[in-house]
Image (tube, rainbow, N blue to C red):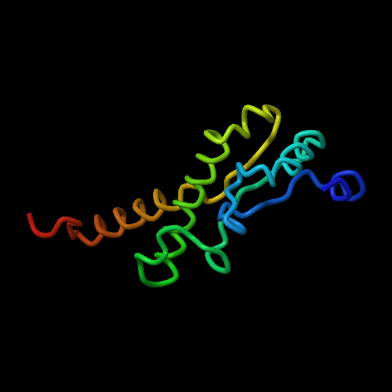
Length: 127
């Protein structure tokens, strides 16, 4: 991270929200990451990747699109919960982060609602 910031001029990087080796983002193993990110003013993006790591809820849906929506939404929620309730934000108050695609479920439901309203169909069946 120091090389990326100081030599390459990069201002941020990203990490997956999923548990890695059964460790959540508030695990003490991540403390050096948060400390250095704050010290270097290096923003950390939290972004799900749908695949390759355990993801909450993907076992309950079918198809890539559904797994994408579920994993992005739930893993981002759990990661933010762990960072906030796990005390990371308190210990590193100047830590900067970004959360792309954190509202995947909102976008999916908006898309579904728009498509249904255009077709004249009701999501609740006939009324």
